[in-house]
Image (cartoon, rainbow, N blue to C red):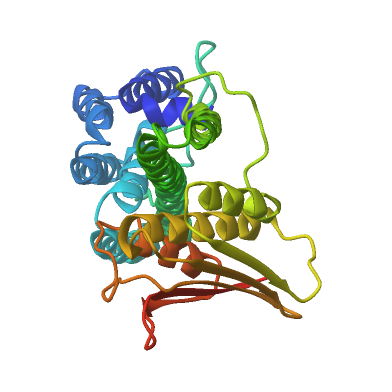
Length: 399
């Protein structure tokens, strides 16, 4: 209901004007002068702009009420327009201005109350006695006895002004709190959307790195196997046949992993298979060995189950390291893979004795991709040439 009223302020002003106007017509005396009706109509019209110009409503209502006091009129519903105006200024206008208007209103009310008190105290006792006029069409009324009307004095008018001002301030504070809550809700919604977008971007970046690792490794193995098959085609056909079989197996494995990754992007209907982990490293070493590169795979310590993120990172780090060996170490290089299970960490070391003297260059997918994987998991990463020749990759992951 309150939201509906806030969303249709013009309808509220019209309804309030009609309500006060009808109440004034019903309660007004038949002998009210034309001036009284004209000023009352002006005061009612000012209610229609109280949201856009509350100061005009307060000023018009105050002047009209003061004129009605001077005319000696009784308090009528139209005289509360001044209170509605003060409420509107406190609610939607300047807070400092509303405080000033309250002080001015109290000052005027005090001055008028003092004037009425002094004037009434000097008025002689009515003689002859007051005449009671009985009219069947209107309530019993007394003939004007010359007393100045004060509408309850300073206490009554001052209390009315204070209540209207406090009600306006309360409405103002509620509006501010509502605006703050709405802004906070909008900020939270934007923050949620931002987090969702960042999560999607991070996931796509992760999948991009996964695709790079899979494709680069598979192509490196396929190229080496194809070269070996071509070299042995005439002299030892059986070796060529083994190399071709290895190419087929490598291609199938790579296609399966690519299908899985593309399925995460919603671009294909994948066969949901578990992500590769440390248990597949012996098979990976066998594939590299079959490609013609000697590989020694060592495990130190007691193997234990790893979390899914550490398990996948372990496989990708070794896979990318072997890919770099195939690309940069030379055809006569040999590789040693060591997995060292410590009480709270897993150490991975991939070394070769090839001819690489500088870190392989890349655009953030090779060594930088491995370093990022390790950093996200809270581990340490180091890669560089060995003093005795070759290249070494070392990573420590919390497990």
